[in-house]
Amino acid sequence: MKKRFVCQNCGYESIRWLGRCPSCNAWSSFVEEVVSEKRSGTEPTSPPIELDRIEPVKLKRTETGFGELDRVLGGGLVGGSLILLGGDPGIGKSTLMLQVAAHLAPDQKVLYVTGEESAEQIRMRADRLNIRAKITVLAETNLDQIATWIERTGPEFLIIDSIQTIFDPDFSGAPGSVGQVRECGNRIMRLTKAAGIITVLIGHVTKVGAIAGPKTLEHIVDTVLYFEGDRNQRYRIIRAFKNRFGPTNEVGVFEMTDAGLVEVDNPSSIFLMEDGDRIGSSVIATMEGTRSLLVEVQSLANPTYFNYPQRQTSGIDYRRFILLLAVIEQKLSLPIRQYDIFVNVVGGIRIDEPAADFGIATAIISAIKSRPVPKGLVVIGEIGLGGELRPVPNIETRVKEAEKLGFKQCLIPPGSKGLHSGIEVIRIRDVRDGAKLIFGE
Image (cartoon, rainbow, N blue to C red):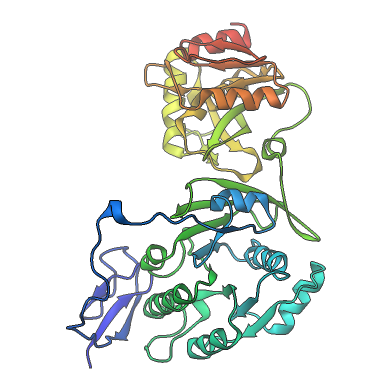
């Protein structure tokens, strides 16, 4: 019997125990596992075929009852697909899946396998959400028993909550270990693919926000979704990081209410305030997949009392923030070093694209000058090291979103052509010209 040591954080394998993982640098993360014997010499079951001779298949999709979730999935659930849904504890993963199951239950057989809660707890959640659908609940963690009941009940929609609580008795290791998660994921994939069952695996996340377990779990599934947000706030965002049946990087926005999750039809409205001009606040148009969102960026500049001023951000990349501060200080001659500067993206959303540079810089300049950004203004553009504004993709989609929400003026980089809208569009050459136009200097 062969044995190996596997890092429970990243899946790195070693023939001996190590105190520190050489791959992810985690301490005391190695656990001993038994290596299963693999059979060899099997005959191929299907011959190769030329690509142009393969008959195309039209995917049949099933609506989930949430337009936002259907959008992220590429139009709905695909028969026989395997979906991995990750998120922080208490974010609403189980609630979302129970609501989807309730929508599908009248037309499909639904099996909800719970390894974390009892059947009575699932009933209590259903009562809170006012769900009276015909859903079969199985409280079990042994994969052999789960497979038996899947064959007996023949579900068309299957939920495993969660994959980290399921264990295969044929393999060593505790539930949630790298080996167990990998083997259980592979076995569930083979079982559900053969029967054409739509399956959702709910997964835990680590402290850094990645789905717990080996990366192979994300490779074998068809779709990887992340449910994000602060459990103490109302709004949640679901993202697709992998999708074999649709686009990636799409987002759906939900609101957590007493009656469960409710989709938000106009996400831009939840990130904007309705009052007038405010110091240190600007509105930018960011892209999330194929959707444009208007988001408010806030900045606070406070005179520092230390030799090293504080720099803190929430929702933007810190290194990009430092770069923008350097450009602002050099091109506008502002006393950046005399202020503690804080930047926050309203609503808990995170912005990763450079098109937000101009909006972030505008909020910082407004905070330092103590002058408000005019109401009804949207700023779009990437800032180069020379202070110049560079073109960004999907500019027309961003401008149309601003026009739809009633904004009157939009500042964009030069070189953007083909814009046809009722909003006033002004092309700005660099950050200095933008500051002069906005703040009158």
